[in-house]
Length: 261
Image 1 (cartoon, one colour):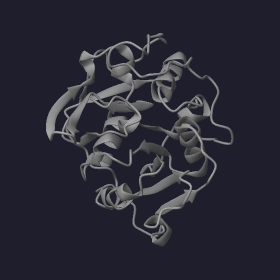
Image 2 (tube, one colour; image 1 turned 45 degrees about the vertical axis):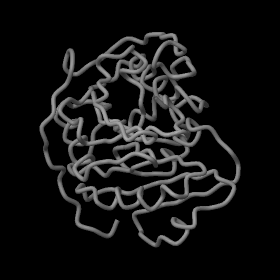
Image 3 (tube, helix red, strand yellow; image 1 turned 45 degrees about the horizontal axis):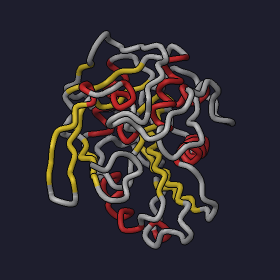
């Protein structure tokens, strides 16, 4: 990547339940309160073309993947948040299926940023799979184009993955900001149904290896929870990270794919 790689910084974190958390697959009514709008059976085949060993290098590289559609106003903020991450060994991959390419990303010459535009509309699940296949990081991290991530987010989540020798980590709680009225609150996923506990893909971070076993289903909603169900089916180690509720602010607005209120 043309830079000196640095080891991840360790931050405070812990897990909920048994450590690390490994659960059998569960089917949850995705039309229940606060659950994803669509349910899908877990996938137990990997992303085509992806190969990786479970073991990580001494300094893992992180590929941040971000599907986007019709949100050009968010792109400069997304880039700024990525550049401010204090984890050095990273790159950013964006797949945009808006009818026109991003005016902002089309001008970016940063060698760590890879913008892919296609006029062919695809689901979020299909875009996530393609981004994993295109990228090369030994760890995959998800960013949503409309959310805010603290500068220590990637380094803290990588440290949690390594500390627990986990295959997959996600946040147990985060901040939410409702754009309509300016209301902020803490969202604690541990108090939710199973789908909401393990859904919310904007805080997923996992070894590239898991994509050799599980892929995202071809859905726009619920693809994240189905992915985690697949990890549980495969017996992979999944951990929820506590102590990081200030690392993400999830924006609630009229165009969220998931829950809006």
